[in-house]
Image (cartoon, rainbow, N blue to C red; front, side):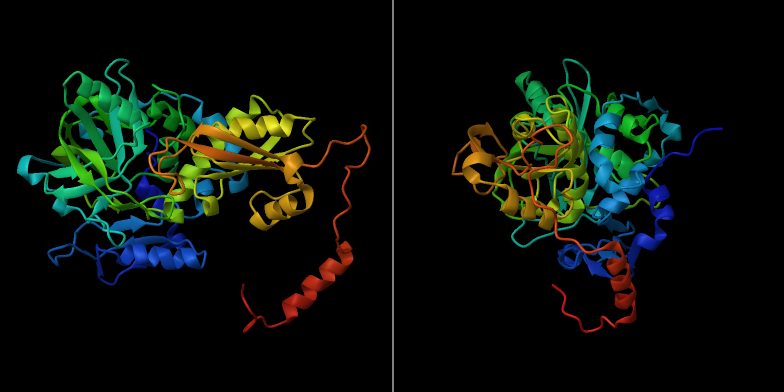
Length: 475
């Protein structure tokens, strides 16, 4: 008997209690993003399913929109089959490196090609593409996984990259300059050839996570996704490009096209993961040839710069960092890339590192391009509680002894603190771990924490249960 494919629908069906249905009509401009901002402000993360989205012409789209799909670390961990989101780093590091080849299915068995629109029928205006923030020039695909192929090795690459819908069959596409997709694009253009590309939208969160694995170049994301899934990912040849560009057979929507050399357009400003509007850039133009989709397709949108977009990529970063650090610092226990630090901060948890190893771990982490601040703590510190990390910094650090500053390292050009035109940045490591034990079995050189007896704590819990918290101040 054929296995049931994991897709967006099977995930939503098993998480109905986590879905908030928006049945009132909402404009495709700003409203759903505003709702996500309000939810972020109170740290509430339901999946949002908007069934009646009004397009620019006032008509309601027949395609519903799901967003906030990955705003909850707990929900994403459950999608991966993890009981505890705090153990994602080690798990993801191992699973994303476990290559599971994909399963190619014929078009007749691919739900994403149940409906095929080509030529003038391939109209992007049929999709409920959202305009998210003030000053953005128009609607953007934010959860489109751009898939290209290295023309030399033939290996695929997939990355989430923004696209500004400029017309019925025209959109920009911004592959970050150092991304693997940008490398593939340049190889085609250096040959004066059009770059074939497909953008797939909507899938099970485990697939979304697997295709965000941080890989070497060139290396297939389909195999990494299979490793995360624990089963082959079903893929299908595209209508326009055939086997040259494959896409997940169980995705919701696919947009196919070409990026020709010399065809560029202004793109942006756009709300980036930094929480700021990124500047206007030059971006390739994609000429759309075909849109395929499932019957009763669901359009997926990421809240750009919000927790919804940060969580899956940050968890994938945790896996990549864990593998990088483990090679030089065996005492590493866990890694956390907190949403509060966007993608610039990482917290490392080590178990009694020998002298120098905490700095080895910090240096390895700072080699990761996006990071600019790394804090290393001991195993008694909960790295998922920022108050605990800052307590360790406040009580275990002397800056002259425990800080490491490095200049001229590769960095994210989206960092708004960079000087104009800078291509490298300054990075900081903080070693908030305790000194090593003077001898085996001796206590760590730190005063004991201030605690209360277990019996008193149980009695306090009983008393708290009898009190009425209504009206209590909330910080």
